[in-house]
Length: 349
Image (cartoon, rainbow, N blue to C red; front, side):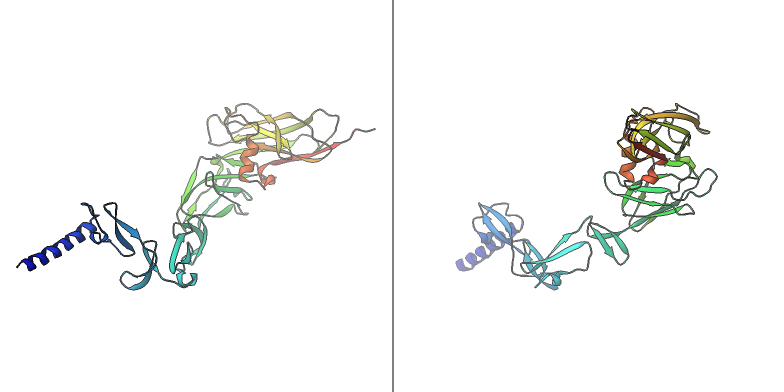
């Protein structure tokens, strides 16, 4: 009888130690046998009186009780001989064979190509590029060709394109994002046009097509040309370049204190501000002004004008140049109205 009781006691103690180890060994431990690992690819050890699960690298295991795997840093992963054994055919993951097991890392925010098309990785999923499309028309509902349209993610990417002869445009953009829209154009047959920057946004999902139409209610307009000859010639003795400009400025619903200012400069570097003062828009402000610019050195230059799409309370000096160059750095003929030419020559002897 004593022997039977002893055996039962020992067995009971063993079962009790197993249960305590599976629950974190709340009552402490004295040796490893009192601890039980909760899953594969880990061993339970008694350390300083507490059960600790230690991750294992190496050794076989089963994935979903079906697939042969190998333990790698505490996880049961697919076993491999080389990286080809680990290829999961997902364009948004990188796969490597490490210590006989497959290691997968995400290519989040990297470019990707799936069966549905090109895109960008969002996590481990290829988010197919989206489209933003629309039509640009003037006051009379006529299409505006060659309008430069931009879609920007603040402090990130900018996508841009131009309208065709029918005023239509289509931008391929990244999906799963919200874009700030802008548009601007300079034509010899129509005035310059600038949308209210930052006033309207378009959100697109992966693979989606969104519509953003542009009309005269979203813009500032400017027409400007030199008074007299199309070429101004000065010598290096001149203290200023005097630029006489005839202009028309009008706008549609933007803001109550929007300024009808425009700026004139040489080769895209602006140095003189024309401020006709507040006006009723429409029909707009018309007039003639003469602006003085600091002369450059000997050479041939272009004179440009640019509309300042800001509030009267803003400081216009330098701002339009950054405004346009940040969005369309390589499109000077679209950013600015070409007024004419400037020739700087040496004085006659």
